[in-house]
Image 1 (cartoon, rainbow, N blue to C red):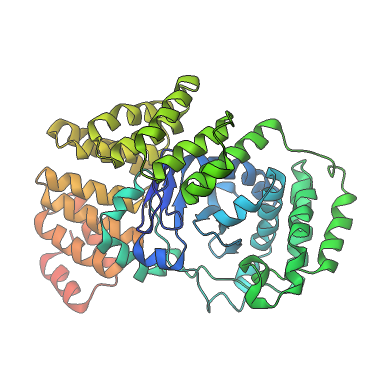
Image 2 (cartoon, rainbow, N blue to C red):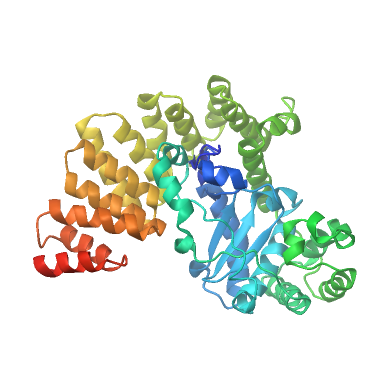
Length: 470
């Protein structure tokens, strides 16, 4: 996780790059989320390491369901509430609270398989609740490290919160008992097709069987939208026990990754709890990782760095440890020292956009013309892989401002707002960019495209017509 996690809209650095953890986004370090989101106790988290673990668990299930894994977007929601959801646009949301409640990878994969059953069955499209209650708009940023940057742009955060259209209506879905049963059965079949057991889903439901005796207001959000009953659990158990792979178990690598993911989340989200849970006497990797993150979150960077340096000496090729180190140094105003570890993280994982964004942010922060130019290059390379990354566009705008490229800066800001779904702001900045950019250049045409795609006013259209579109 390479970003931090507070109530102001940030992201984790390398590991938790964009974890709007409970108030931030995550990457290598959990970053805070914006104040508006903090009030709701939820935020969208981005973290390269955690996202990769989740996709390794989920992608075979998506494929078994006939879905292209590349088209399914996993939303990691920074919220202590136990919940998960599937919604329109092939998006699946997993709360950090739910992940922390799972005891094994198989339990988490069981929940993912169940939600995949909803996606494959197009249940979100049929839910009467879809257009009624929505998940509050969530900040889409980069990685744990970059999240912190968002904290310095409250205006952008405020706009984000007011423009949910980018995500569509992510609803607090309500499924019928019939849909739940179908999703259970489909999920069990998907797991069987991938050679995995459905036992974990039964175990997960069994652990919360008591929810059915509570009134709606006292139940976990997941079981309010996904009605649970003893009959349903028993029917699912009867199904999975007959399947050939019922006795399949998680691999050692899967178990290790699951523990690392939980340790990382615990350290960022519940640092004090993490220090109690992961005692100093525990010399295992997950425990030390969690303690390093927890001390970082508790503003003890030197203590965190000592643990982290020891971990790096034993795992020099782990890009997320280098990312986290760079994030800590950057966040505590040791920007020149942050450059090298962030370069190492990118060298070890060159295709990770969030890691490049963190490096670009640091280079821009050095206020050296050559470094700023290099930072622009890193951000552009990141945007090749994640063209809708609003944080990268915001940082690129800052870099262009430092270089005196006013037109390019306004265009980058327009891209930022456009990708946040804030069409009014996108249109305003695109119009300003057109005034400053040389006519008929690719940048000028892109600014024009943004205006036309952002609900232009009659006055805007008249201005475009007078000046010519190309």
